[in-house]
Structure formats: structure tokens, C-alpha cells
Amino acid sequence: MDKQIFNSLTLPERILIIRLKARFIAQWQSADHQFGLYHWAGHFIEIQYHWQAQRGLAAQWEPRLLSVFVDGPGCMERLLPYAESIQLPDWSV
Image (tube, rainbow, N blue to C red; front, top):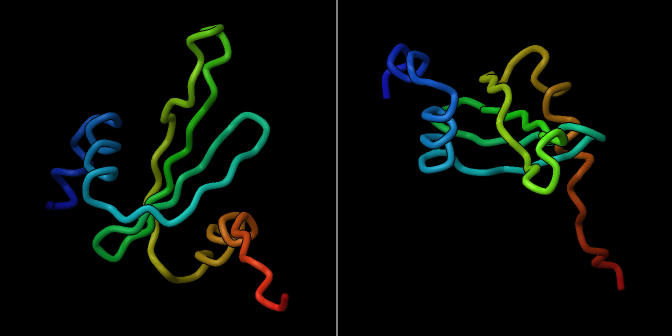
């Protein structure tokens, strides 16, 4: 998909395309946000979700922001929270 066309779509439309086309890599969560990392067409895509507490029992994680970045300067800092959330099994046993 052309970058210009992708950027002209609404946030829900872009989220849907990412979920259908991109490869999910990892996620991590802070106190009030959840972050999902995807990879598609040579780009890392991060979706930031926010908990809609004011909805009471209907609360859920809803997409708030979407950012796209490529491997390069500053990329390691963006990926570090995801690396810290990965739990590998202890193979020494």
C-alpha cells in the first residue's frame, strides 16, 4: 500500500490494516497504557492503547496513537521496553 494512501486513512482503518497485514512482535504495559509492536514492509509500527476507565464495566484498551519508525538512530530506545517484556524459559534445568 502506498504510504500517502495509508496516512490518509483514519486511525481505526490503519489499525485494522496493521492487524491484518503486519506481523505482531511483542507488547508491554505501563500503569495506564498498553503498547503493541508490529513489523510491516520494513517498518516498525507501534500502537499505543489507553484504558477507557470512564466507561466503567465497558472499559477496554482502545487505540490512541500510532507511530511508525525504521531501524536507525534511536530505534534501540524504542525497542528496549519490548525486549524487557520477553520472558525466555530457563534451559539450564
